[in-house]
Length: 178
Image (spheres, rainbow, N blue to C red):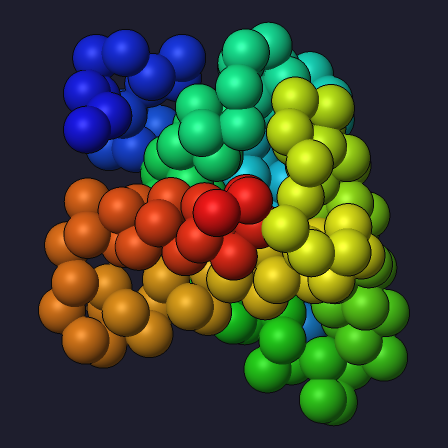
């Protein structure tokens, strides 16, 4: 299995945790401050890092085969989800009453979908996919959601390692040829 010491990023506990109050902001605070909270939760640093410059994205792109690409991405999702779940839950709930946050929620969903299309396109450079690339991207988009992490790890008591194995196994079974 994947040894923590071989991952190209620090363990999740080494990264700063965003405060819930930073994501909520003060009344009347603009969505960009909330956006920054989400971006730093993803990057694991005190500043936003564009997706293509993140260490785990570069590691996935450099991986020589689909099995490794999937394992690396599952490990990254597992490391990011605990930081991101709270921030996204706050944005999602507030989006019902705050138009700026509704727009931000839609933007996050669309950007995630676009990134999953990039991930699937990268996978398809090293192996044929079992299913249509668009469907594959939708499956990765749905299963890499921080909400799924929260359900399985936060509510059902799974360990992060079990969740990572679940993602890796699920993506390999659904996306890669028999």
